[in-house]
Amino acid sequence: MRDVAIISFAQTKHVATRQDVNEVEMLMPVLVDVVEQAGVTKDRIDFVCSGSSDYLAGVAFSFVMTLDGVGPWPPISESHVDMDGSWALYEAWVKMQMGHADVALVYSYGKSSPGNLRRVLTRQLDPYYLAPLWPDSVSTAALQARAALDKGVITEEQMAQVVIDARRNALGNPNAQLAGDLELADLLAAEPFVSPLHKHDCSPITDGAAAVMLAAGDVARELCERPAWIRGIDHRIEPHAFGARDLTTSVSTAQAAAKAGVANGKVDIAELHAPFSHQELILTQSLGLDAATTSINPSGGALCANPVMAAGLIRMGEAAQRIMRGEADRAVAHTTSGACLQQNLVAVLEGEG
Image 1 (cartoon, rainbow, N blue to C red):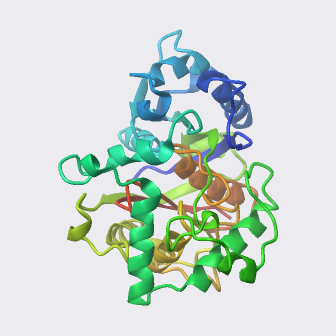
Image 2 (tube, rainbow, N blue to C red):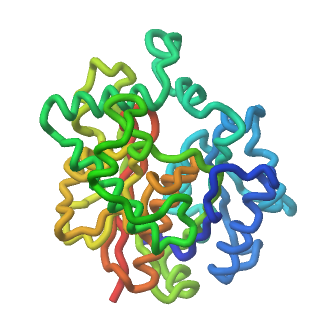
């Protein structure tokens, strides 16, 4: 396999709503930042790939307008996935494995605030049996949490501790939307939101964007002092039908982790895309991670900022950034899409020296 690395990462300061800018205006400073960090000019970028959703923008082919931020002239090699930006990263990685690019720009964005996100996400469900019933994203997550609690896989105290740790970690993240010190007793006493979930168990509505630059082999070493090498990457999908899978575990995550090689060495940090507190517990178990030796979501994770379509790419960038800074030698980045952890992507990142 060809060596490919993340060499730069940029993101917005995440907030609940950005009424002052449109998607292009929100994205442009991020694109400028990631290109400047990489130290490349536009003519050196061989491939551009983006991730977004027309359902959020409310406009067909909405990704086309963001090419104004990239600069489509002179003509560029470009692609788009209607998924989180981490799947755009996967496409760019495949393109580079084929030898068609040495440098690739990957970006994603989402403004969740203009619409009703809980209803929008029902469109991810099975179109024949589930979507017509309009079960929203929080309600389906609550079904999963209840199943895990009833099975004894997790406890309410563990869910609350996930939130406490996330908010505390986010105190060191200037881009986080939510941060602070919380008390376990206060969280356990909070009013239910969609039982058994409380509001603090759910990720916030967030507007934001992110971008990474990829480079291959010696080009990466030339452009970055300590690249974050993608040593393994894989993604898997589970059935649409909730009754066809065990919601209390994540088989697809475990399979992707095995293919990516998560267990092949010590994991210093793990950035897990868990929009709900109980999902972080399920993912940690499915990935075979030990929270005693691995720092889970040192950025605060999606519970502290969840720009839909960018939150997974941010997990990639946050993990890579710590490797590039020399704060970690080996990291795992995870992304999910669909209801109740239906689709999952796992990447292993490593530094050299």
